[in-house]
Image (tube, rainbow, N blue to C red; front, side):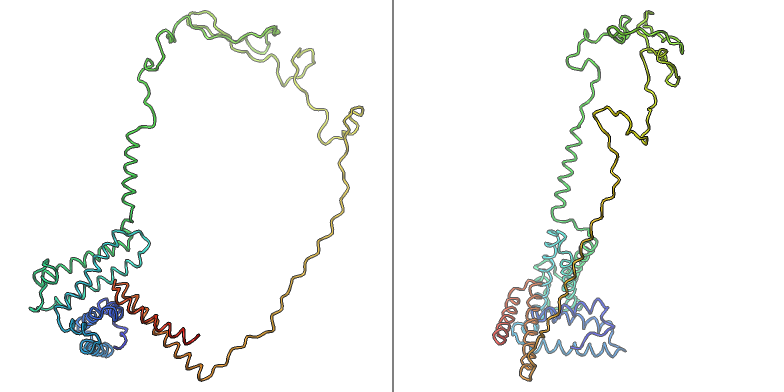
Length: 405
């Protein structure tokens, strides 16, 4: 089959199905064959090959490829299935529907770590279920859709509507996955648990309700709480200190005001204005026993060396001698590493060694090819094909390893 033309690489009904066909060429030849039939049906029904030599050559090559697969496949079972449309329908439907249920199961256990793989699996399942349009596009009395669907669909139209419904579900889930709208596993349970905790916290208030009346307070009685507006209640005055000197009345202001109780009798006196003005100057005799501190006699920058010569505490002037600077430390010389003069000598390539290298390269390519087929089979849960391809790959690998050692 020739390579895909540039004009068809952006067609959603061609490029993805050719890629799926190549993936399943070894893992599931029947589904791979019908992926190519789907592409041929799309090209011919839309007349994409008309007026385009590249598309026309690709279509002819694809037709020859499908005829070769159907006529000369090495597996007898594959040829038998391809020769019977009912068996082909059953196999393609079972393969696609098994992937459909697997996708739904993966979505129910989605934890956000396999987003890319799950999106690829959803797209592949959409392609494989779309291949079933090959069997529903035309009326074929030999097909029993009730047998294929297990009795769910009795006619071609019901089967076609059933497939369209599954495709709609897959596309909707793929859109939700791309938009990150699918809830993660365990997230719904955590949200429900948080909702229950919040409801319980709303029912139990963290603050006790205030009492409606003072009588609700425990231990309180009428005898211990007299009314506040009683005429006998007086605010106690300030206590008098023993032997406190009596100060004369201040000439700067009137006497202290006296507060009276509700009965008219004097209760206590407020303090009056101070007798002395802190800013006024006077003799010590005028101030009496109260004396404010004066300004300091010496400033911080005065010479205090001649003060208090007889005191036991001696003052020493600061040492103004300049200490000699330490010599600078010698700078270590950088260590220069000389490159080794030894050279690596390679074994010269001869005609025999070149042939051995080419043969080994081809065998490694065969190992990679079988490994890719095994990976494709594992992607579609075909364990038998994966095991067979891995066994072929390991056999070639052992031969290469034995030959090169």
